[in-house]
Length: 93
Length: 431
Image (cartoon, rainbow over the protein chains, first blue to last red):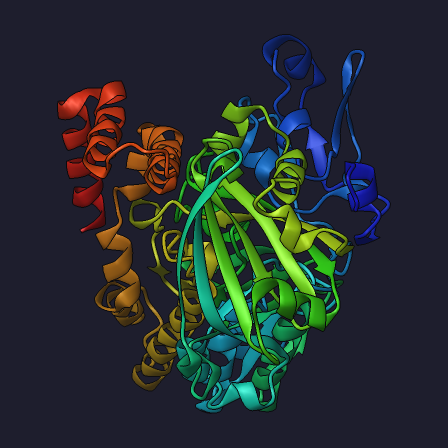
């Protein structure tokens, strides 16, 4: 039973673009203005990871749900669609 | 001179494909643009598709569409940590034509549904992102895509680009949605042999069951969990408002694991083999979140227009209905050769005169009320469970005494006045 997020993410097909469609506008804002680093918590693909002094964005595993764009309390995430035909490819539901 | 269409529809989900279908059927030259590899590849739904609004686009669709099972039983569970109260309805009439609703797998259904629009004459192009609407003199006249030489023109652009409608937002039709206007849902498809599904859910043949789960499944946040039976798999998912997800400090996939391991749920799904993990936002802002629906040369439909009834888990049906209404307005606009906001306004009035506008208006304050008064989920569902447990436990206490104790337990926390207030508030937002 895919318990961990890593196991779950292995169930999904991705066709990642070379370029990220998610951009942290200002890493300083994450470091100084965002104690809770909410995006690292609610992102269903575990795309965001705080590494020392900057936010690492694993856009390759993005579900394109839009939660980070709406949920970032500092409007610090530039959110675009991946290039046509790229990104997540759902096969079932 | 680049090619010009009568209508460009952005997004080949249920809303877009329905709109493209009706426009094409009526002789309009339609381009349907999908950003995914195929229609449905970016789409997620719990899995219940209603018959009526689908049939309005494709008559007797169930005879050829890739549906999973017709639903014959709808269950509602009110969960506590180690108990639940349940209710539901099962009816054999739902196993027969014309059916009530079906479970579907969207990646398959959406491909088929978009193909029906193509059969009517719409042109479908996949793997293409619409970057912006091209405007001239305050009127939308086409779209700019991410393909080389990717500008395409049309009399009307239909925005069916889903909950993340960057296009409607960029036109100023709405501001960015707030975390309490969207629900974040995580779900899994678990493969399971048909016989095992039928045994566990008490089903025969290809009959399906849906289970909506309230209370402990969302750990007190506003939202629901669900289980839907497909042919050889089960969809299980859970969602809360994004604001609730933020408040609860639980990760969406951890909440999903919590639901899968809940002692009331686990027996139905254990040893199911995970086939896919999906997450999506549901636009649950309701009546007040509906954006501007029409502009000069442009209309907004489906999720992009926040047309979702969270209480009755209706969304794809509203998407299809809104797509059809938009198509009818566009056909009229073409006849009048007036694609201005005024010329397309019959779409807006159709929405608000239909079940969509009326139902969303009926529940306009409901989400907000439940979000700001968490006692309905946090206190009353556990109380209901304890009351049932006490009432059905035979321990020598006379029934009248039991009833008095149960009534006391309801009023103990919030007081008689508080309970009366809660009841009145709930009645007011539901009536």
